[in-house]
Length: 154
Image (cartoon, rainbow, N blue to C red; front, top):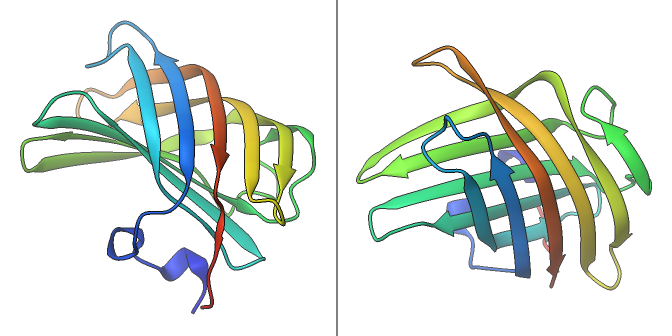
């Protein structure tokens, strides 16, 4: 089993900090102001899941999975460092709509990543397609500033 196979929702909460971004104005929300739910690694892959709880019934989630050996600087999503680029989801009531980032449409600029200290700082930008409307939406000016990386055995 690998970290990619884990069901993050079944794990205890880990990580602290912020994940923020803007979304283009024609989407359901124009901002994402999330907190980490999970920030974990098996020393091969790192998984970060953050949720923006907009109201008691509406939330948005960003998931990112990347290679633990990711390099500082700009990394395009078409590289080998991203087994699963950004995923974005929108929950309203009991209904969740999940979206994967558009193919090769995004990047992350890693400013700081230290697996031993458990910190990750980066800027990001990605696009996703709303499968209901076929519209392309952009998540831009994203900033990740999280700590408390938990190492797990898989």
